[in-house]
Length: 443
Ligand SMILES: [Zn+2]
Image 1 (cartoon, rainbow, N blue to C red):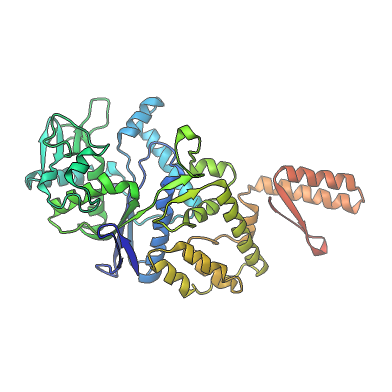
Image 2: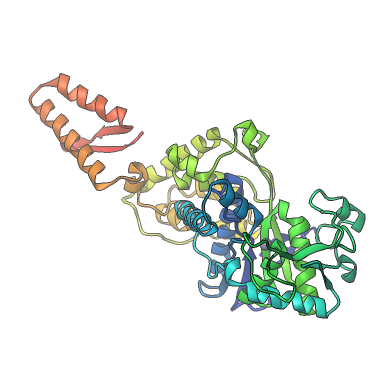
């Protein structure tokens, strides 16, 4: 297998440190509000990588950690703005996030650490950094001294001047250099806080991932993933903290980043009205599998343009594949086609893997097995065509179909047509089969 490594800007052979314990860490969401579609691209991309690694090294040979950031000023501000507590915000947002991930068929990671549960190791790591001369305390803060680490900038390939000019660098009187970044900051009485040697406060965002990845995976691990926007400052700072605190040369050996997502050709923004959450799309009736397929349709390092047209195209393709599986009697999964593995092993080339799926329509069992690598075609065809249906709704639809059947038998065609129209208005399409059997699906 080979993957592009952001550290070297090259596609490199992937050789895990220990093939019986392949370790991957991916930065998860900050849980203050519904995640937008762009947040789900890394979730789906690294879920596909997780599937590939397990296929190659064994189901139990991969340790995947993906965190939840549940301490953040955005969460505090959201609680104030909506006049509720932080716990209410984070519990609700995490539940919604998990519900969306289930709909997108994203498997749960082995570890899903929450920052609030790892404050102690964060404090311990900051103490190590201060003792080692890599960080300093000032006015209730602890700050990383970027001059203490000569490799600072190696991931983002930025000079100190570039980094200081970065939009997210905050000038403050207690900083020795404007580029020094916060490891710990003080909390007011109203803000959540934990005791520390520097006073009551809370951790900075970057130290969270350094401490949690160490707790879950160890001082060094194989793959660290996330979106392109995290390279600087977040991942650059993670490397500085982890390598200095642990005395290691590397944190992760392979750094992988997915590209940006645009919506209908534009950068997603609330003011342009093209800001979608997965929840909104699901409420519009788009299935999680259609959203997932759309997110995998471009190579992960390329920009991805997300649109309703794209989802329509992906849904039509899934209809064809599921229709084909249905005709074949919904076979059990067969063999994964080696060409699909080869495509994914070549820097996770999902468009190439999808192209090969198109060639497997004469081998339904193998199509189903191969699509598993992308997390697709895992439903039975009936649930695909019917979508989510409650028992009550199903009973109502079946009763209407029976009513229409009876009307036709009575030659009461006006009633039969009226019932069909009623079903159409419910988004239900009927298919009359031989032997008087009528099947239904969503239109
Ligand atoms: Zn992170």
